[in-house]
Each structure stands twice: as C-alpha cells, then as structure tokens.
Length: 205
Image 1 (cartoon, rainbow, N blue to C red):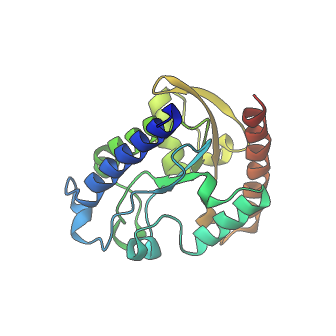
Image 2 (image 1 turned 90 degrees about the horizontal axis):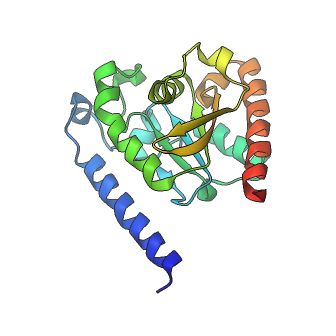
C-alpha cells in the first residue's frame, strides 16, 4: 500500500467517524425535528471547500447539502468555472435544518461548528468559499478579522491562517439570495471568476 493510499484511507475513515457522530448528534434541540442530518459531502482532498449556512427543506429530506434551487444555482456556478461537485467539498455551519429555515441561533452555531472545524482540519483546503453572512461571520471570528457585512467583504480574497495552515478565503453571497435578486447573481458570478483565478494559482504552484 502506498503512502498516498494510506493517507486516503485514513481520511475516509476519519470523515466517516465525523459523519456518524453528526448523524447521531443530540447536542442541541434541532435533532428533534430533523428528518436527516446533513454532514456535508465531496472530495476529501479538495482544493476548494464551500461553507453554507444550514440545510433547507430539500437538504433535510435527502441528507445532502445544496440539493434545492440554491443547489442547482451552485452547480451552474461550479460548471461556469469548469468545476464539479466531485472535485470540491460542500458543508454548512449547521448540520441540521432550523425550523422554517430560520437563521441559526448563537448556541446552535457554538454547539455544531466543532464538526465543521474537524472537517476543515481533515480536508485542509487551499481555498474556502463562504456562502452568505453566517458562514463568513463564523470564519472571520476564528481568525480575528472584523466582520463588516457580506456586501462589503465579498469580491476580495483574504489570506488567513486557519487551524495552523494558510487558506485563501473568498466570501460571497449565498446562492439562495441570488434566486431573488439579479444583482446578487451577477456578483456571485464575478466572485466565482475570482475563485477560478485563485484556484489556477494553486494548481500551478
């Protein structure tokens, strides 16, 4: 068995452990009304990791992230820069759907994000794209950056040290917001071109 294969097996085993813990989690009240926890999915060696807010209605039903209308738009955005889901990892701040898709509560974020932290440490992505203000706020809080709101923060690349390794952070709007506002969609598309250019740099390095 090669070192590369051993590393891959180890990552798979560790992610399976995290996933099992998430599916069995009763640490906050959200588990009581969920149909399925949504641990996240994708390539464990991904250069790019996307972090959204929380599962919605369809995600709760299927147990997978971004499978509703916002997910369809995310797939289109990925395709526009020649990426697919199998090449990236997609997760959320919360692993269970809040009732009526309400915003995450502070205690829910505090309780749930250790799972996300472990996923980031395991994957060690070169780039993190935060989708929306909640995931952006969370990552900014971890590295001591001032949260000025997603409208001001998007459109830029932030070089951060997260959990001991360097990451290019690209905040942008949540795809769900773009379903109701054409301007957000245009800016999302520009941010994905920013991602494409940054990804190319990492691929060439």
